[in-house]
Length: 247
Ligand SMILES: Cc1ncc(COP(=O)(O)O)c(C=O)c1O
Image (tube, rainbow, N blue to C red):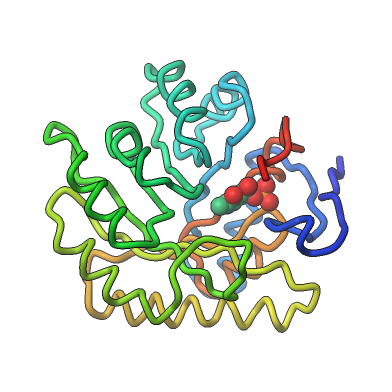
């Protein structure tokens, strides 16, 4: 069944302006595998983006074997993390994180993919409980320099990555980006290529770096072709979100 993203001006649809078909989990996993094989690359991990979806929908996917889920809002996520604690799922924060919520994020998530400033690095490190493993962290890069998006500039990645790597309570795992959904495929490809180059440079200096998180419902095959090791898919798995993003 097709569930088209609301098409309109790019600014009105900041996450994905490309058409999206809702797929059963096994079909999506097969698509990831096929896209990776066609590109001669390893199959990426799937992060199921469950923002605005109820805990029951997460539990249904978990029953089919999906372990990693992505959430954009700390409080919404914590309610689901508590409700589904018995399932032992892996939770990723992928939305913008305000510094005053860093303590809760450091306590409750397994990964934070949206680290884009030094202040946040300090706050997450200070609040990661000693009883938990180090918090996995990705640096979010605003690869198309969009006013509407968070993320650091590509030039800021080395210093931010070094600050994360210096924190024993954090584990630098790589980079995350939300490239602009340009209608022109060549322009989308350029952003993915620039992310892959940044990722390769980062991994050369930090052996533990293994994650390039890019690609969503509308563009995951292209992201995989350009080296994504993790794709974040919401609409294509769950259907349309249950409420719009707050502006
Ligand atoms: C950072 C991020 N990644 C991935 C997604 C999933 O996008 P889609 O529903 O197009 O798969 C979202 C959705 O809001 C998001 O905010």
